Image 1: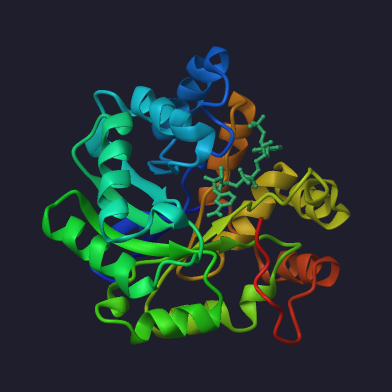
Image 2 (image 1 turned 180 degrees about the vertical axis):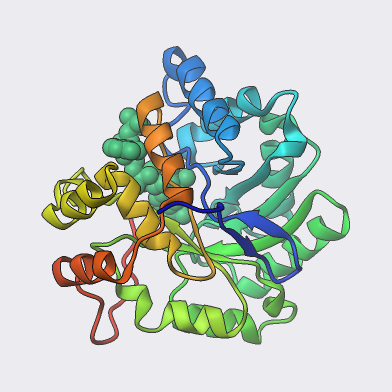
Length: 282
Ligand SMILES: NC(=O)c1ccc[n+]([C@@H]2O[C@H](COP(=O)([O-])OP(=O)(O)OC[C@H]3O[C@@H](n4cnc5c(N)ncnc54)[C@H](OP(=O)(O)O)[C@@H]3O)[C@@H](O)[C@H]2O)c1
């Protein structure tokens, strides 16, 4: 069954596509940059207009690849980037944002994230994020790799409740967040961004359950793995793909609708958590 592509509402009311594109490992080798930019452009053509990058990826190289990919089509794109924790001081955050804007060759980042919790007090980073937002350099801000306790501390900080997302590891083999973090974010209307949605090292994509459900729908295991995450309300999914056939298989997930029998097959092979698990991260 197919249908319309889903979108997710951010706390400020902005609607973003539930399925986007990641960029980790892009920009690491200049020779591959044209292929990487072309794959992102193919994704844009197929409706994957949310692009996730970070100052860390390729030491700025991924942001440069993104700049090439979105040249002339900036207004089509919802652009996400991240500041490294050791840069996330009051002044360091602003300087890192300026460097990212320059590499991205744009005047604004739509969503700017703290890459993971570090030693800088979160209230200080939030203050810098809010200053960047007031200047129009970022439209919204969020965090990444924050477990429930870190989210609680963030919500208690001044302006902490303005957080637009928590980007975390989430795939069929890593469902821990379904126990507490996902419901806690949903209760506050904060979407979760699922990173590494295809699992690490290719193991998940060899799952017999994914193959079985894929056979029922005449589609690839990767498409099913992404469509599973898209059944969750308030979840944004950001697969990274450099090969064109991968981009196409991923884009197909936006309109694949899994039924109750499909979900039962996936749950049996990749069971949901029964108790609290510490947040897994890469
Ligand atoms: N916040 C964080 O700490 C954090 C951590 C990790 C990742 N992320 C973000 O999340 C994004 C996605 O995570 P990820 O890159 O770790 O993993 P992923 O998207 O789950 O998997 C990427 C790998 O899967 C392959 N692939 C993509 N589509 C495929 C398909 N349809 N069939 C078979 N293989 C396919 C890619 O190959 P090709 O490239 O050769 O096509 C690549 O090797 C990252 O790129 C990054 O933007 C954030």
